Length: 142
Image (cartoon, rainbow, N blue to C red; front, top):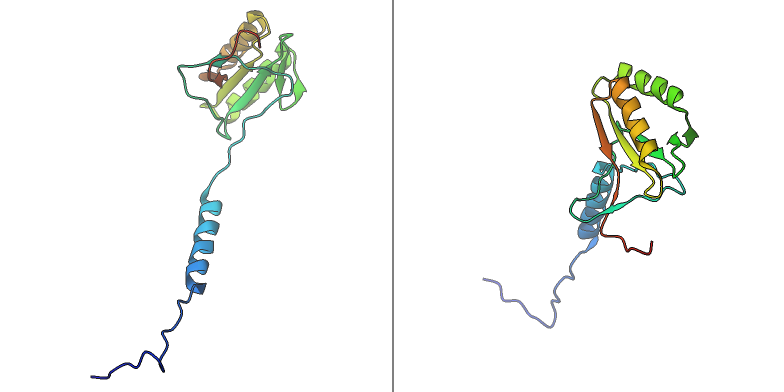
């Protein structure tokens, strides 16, 4: 059995290069494996708040319809009238019969615009329409 002399034989320092390589590889893997879904956000649409539900996020296959406080439907930053919106929804449903829609209505607007868009969705054959809102209670002054 060999006896180690602590004075003449120093311990090798820890090699941290494999550890940093592993950390960077894990970081790259998780960044590549993560999908980033982004909800279409129109400027000026103020969503109502709800406290008992979790916030929603849009999947890429969902169509987002924003309704301004004046009741105008906007899809992909383009304003539509009800006839144009019906044609757009019919073409979406023809391509994908299981397509779903998220309706984001301004809380300052009238219910009439929301009801009209929801009626157009139903007549166009959309099976699932979801309502977009902000989570958390809002104050009365906002």
